[in-house]
Length: 125
Image (spheres, rainbow, N blue to C red):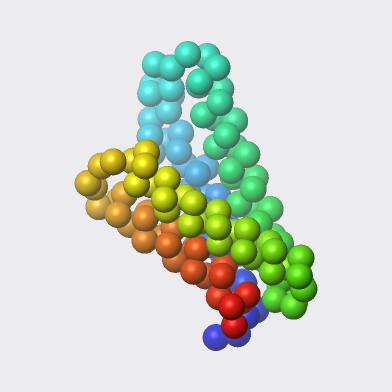
C-alpha cells in the first residue's frame, strides 16, 4: 500500500467521523438530553461538536487534495503526526472519561487506535 493510498484512507476516515458526529443529535437524543444541562454547557457541547465536524471535513480535504505534500514535506509530516497524536490522545481519553463496558465503546477505542496508526504510517515509512 502506498503513502498516497494510506493518506487517502485517512481522508475517508476523517469524513466518516464527520458523518458520525453529525448524527450525535439523533444518536444521543440531544434534544432531550442536552435540555438537562445549563445553557452554557448545552451550547459548549453543540459548538464543540460542530467544530469537530468542520475539523474532520477540513482534515479529510487536506488528505484528498495534498497527498504528495503530506507524504514528502516537513509540514505534511507535521500534520500527519499531529493527526496521529490527536487519535492517540482520543484513545487515552476514552479510558479516562468513558468508563463503561459496552461493545460500542470498545469498537470506538479500536477505531481511534487505527487512526493513530494510520496517520503515523506515511511518516514512518
